[in-house]
Every structure is written in structure tokens, then in C-alpha cells.
View 1 (cartoon, rainbow, N blue to C red):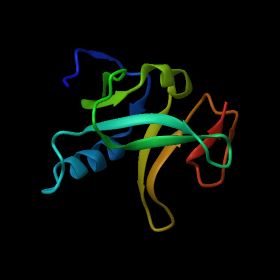
View 2 (view 1 turned 60 degrees about the vertical axis):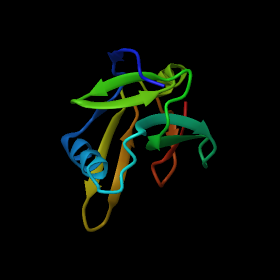
View 3 (view 1 turned 45 degrees about the vertical axis):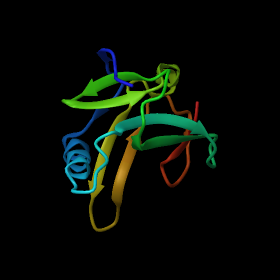
Length: 116
């Protein structure tokens, strides 16, 4: 299954996040048949949890691009992610992806769960 056309991105990546994701995609064992998926699912301590990983293209997915980085997402989830910033933190006290979501009315301490 192939993506049809690229749609304007509802979110954006910081340069650090783009660099880390590209590094993961350039790993020797990376499955070139997968796409970067951004989304949400029910769960977590605040109600919804972010999805950030590599996955196969699903029937309802649309392809987006942010800062030259293509990704897929179910467009119905864009409502929860509009305006969100994804950042890669590589410090001594914190390491990993962080999500700055202007739609979140509440977030948990770990930063991967939110409520709207």
C-alpha cells in the first residue's frame, strides 16, 4: 500500500527530534517498509497516550511532512495533535522524546499521557 499525497502537517518536530528520527531510520536493521507513525490511543494516567513509532501503512492513514520528515497519521487524531511540538531531549537528567501539546488540558508527570 502506498501513500497518496502529502498533506500539511498538524504538528512539528524540533531539529533535535528530526536528527534523532533520521538516525533511527538510517540504522542498518531499519525496516524500510515501515513509516513513522504519530497518533494517540486511549490509556495512560491522564486518558490518552501519544504514539510515536514505526508502523505499516493502514487504510485510513494520511501522509504528512514536517521539517522535511515524512510521517503517517490517522487524520481523525489530528484534532488532538494540532499545533503539537515533538522534541528530542538528550541530557543527563532526561533522554527521550517530549511532547508539547497546546490542546492538553492536563498532562501526567511522565509527559506521555494527556487529557483534552
